[in-house]
Length: 136
Length: 206
Image 1 (cartoon, each protein chain N blue to C red):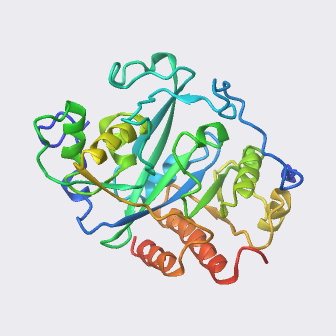
Image 2: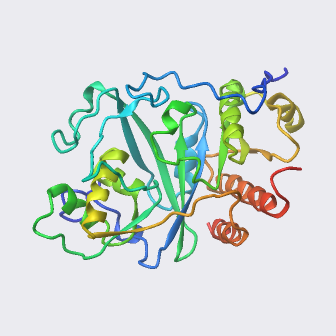
């Protein structure tokens, strides 16, 4: 029995087909909008990746913190990724980034940037990952 | 559920906490069709109990302050399971298992753009499900390996035949695995990392 054959999409430079989701109202290329759209002071949201590590600057939330902010601050007494915060708080990723934008602005948390693959990842980084996996 | 401590929101178990020296994190994305074993693979290699992050889609934007998490009933929720491996005291690796539909990918900022690479998990009973995924990764320039999850009743194809069917170059590793086994899942990740390393040595074109 032979497997089915994949047919490559022709020329690489073709515009990828747009997703079939509902069209965004503001010409966002047909992508559906996130439910949680929270504007910061100037409408900007911190550029946070799923694996950006977040650490609270102080173990004790200030009295002014909302319950959600306080819960988040308690969780990241030790470094925790945005994805983990989303999981433990049972909040969508975008809601967590909105909360974190407030906390970053108020300097209550610190964000340790994720390593982004630029063209190709650093070889020493990959060697570290290999060694880490070998220990598993 | 095991709630440790008296907090209303259970956080990581004490042994799952990252050291304060943790400075940076990298991620690998495991992508494949429904039921192909993404979650199983994440669970078999993760050092923490796998977690789920989700994102909600709707056409209307609703303020989070007005309706904290309760307005999602009319919206579509897309979930993504993930796990974590501590590489060093400074570096952490996260593994995300994501559905193959591109319309979900943009929900998580830079899911693929920021990833080291991807594992395309394949079930030979439904090989065609993975075709689109590979095309999308190629278009985005995300390096990937193909891992064939060996289901007992699935047809077995020699790797050369699979390579031809998937129209992949000789460079792209294809391997069989049993994602229920930690060692096997780890081998898949090792193969990807070695492949990325070879790309870093020789450049992406060859």
